[in-house]
Amino acid sequence: MAFVSCPECGSKSLRVSRLRGFREKLRSAIGILPFRCRQCEHRFRAAIWSLSSIRYARCPKCLRMELSTWSEQYYHPPATTLLWLRLGATPYRCDFCRCNFVSFRACKEKFSWRRRKQAQAG
Image 1 (cartoon, one colour):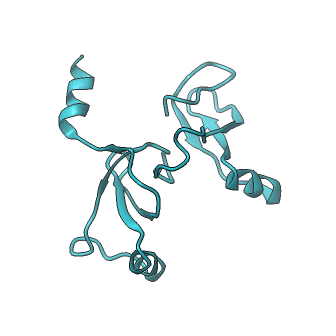
Image 2 (cartoon, one colour):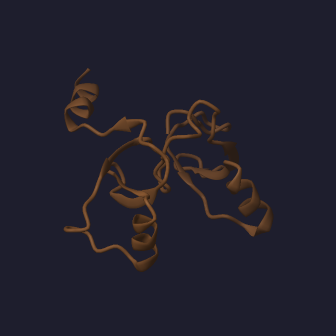
Image 3 (cartoon, helix red, strand yellow):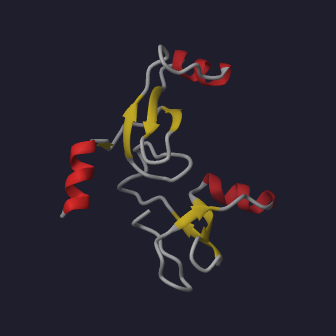
């Protein structure tokens, strides 16, 4: 998550924290999520949506936008996911955290192992 960093220590090693109460659930609906720093364990809230990226799909676990797709042939989704697929949602997979999900939003960046290896080497 390059767009959010810990206000205490400045680390970018974060995870999305559990939602506590009705207010946090309401805030999460408009894009303000609770995070916890993996370095100093500080818990804070931050906005994840910008107007330029609101129309693109994001991984629900790690919030990355580099996604690939998955097939029902190799993955057997739950009934609610199948319903969304039948209504026209696109099946996406985050290859960083291995999360399969569906979304009606478009994919901004296609995941590429070649691009990831080049970024690690450079």
